[in-house]
Length: 133
Image (cartoon, rainbow, N blue to C red; front, side, top):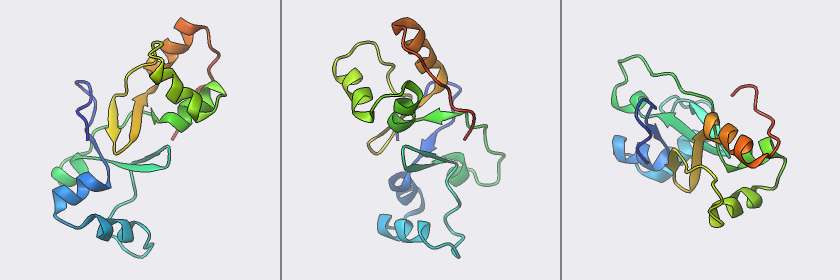
């Protein structure tokens, strides 16, 4: 779990939920694959195949949840630019101005759309924005 920029909701993954709830990570993984089990709610978003939840769902369950902006990971960024996911990774390795991630859940880098829109504008790369979650 990383701390997002101010004003952005905190996101957590299964390891974070295990820490918050005291459950074993393997137990949570098994809950996730049992359709008839309601202790693990559906993920608030799936980013590059990684389920993520709003932290408030776990730490403040009786309070209203903050809005989750449209978020993307490496796979979604690759699709937006029409490139292979490895190309997006190379953009980071070359440090050519690719935006730093806003969250990181496990190994999954997560962004909102505006940094990638700016990257496309700055580099002259065409971008196709996703239409929703």
